[in-house]
Image (cartoon, rainbow, N blue to C red; front, side, top):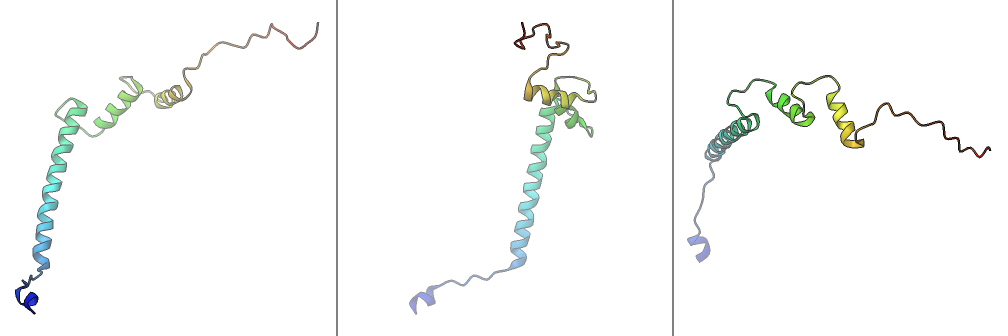
Length: 101
């Protein structure tokens, strides 16, 4: 009985909890926006962002070319996977090792 008599009663107000969560989510959102802005400026190396700048920069970094041409990404992927392909070297057919003398 002594324990129950000394026990404090806390009342739960769901509106207070929601308002605290709302304030926290706004703070988190503002911080994420700030960090995104800092990252974009650092990645692009400039302050003014236009739609498509991040994609253009990423493709430039990947391909190593300033201007994109159709097939650049595929060529770079194939070179990364299989190495550069030598072109124009046909197989030498003058060596006939078919066993005939």
